Image 1: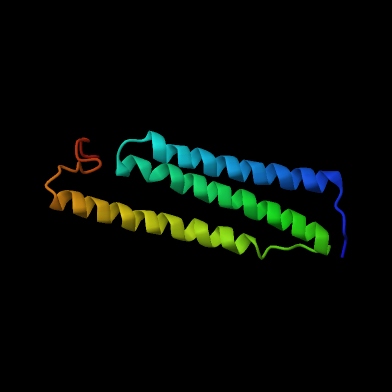
Image 2 (image 1 turned 180 degrees about the horizontal axis):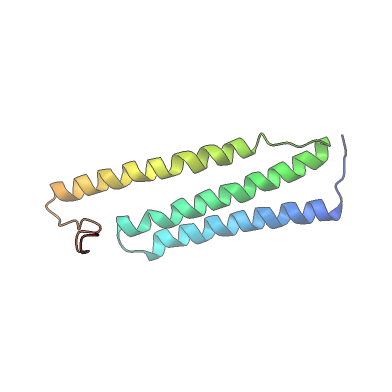
Length: 118
């Protein structure tokens, strides 16, 4: 097992970690800036998914170099998150719509004001 990595491996790993952290940070700013739950739910979802990909790619690059073979186990985490986050977001949105309708709020139906397609 190697105890050191060349500068390009460390630079690529650092770049991927910084990009992942920036994506997560920008997504978290969306929670602060957007007004309603329905607007707020999108920013952290996208930021988290992109941030996870950055971190897992950095892990795969660094560990692959250290072990001397391709290491893709970490990518399973990103695939799992990429598959489950949209489903979880959909359930959260449906629950929020249901609760808003119980409170008597008017929730617009997407595409209801568009003319029918031929």
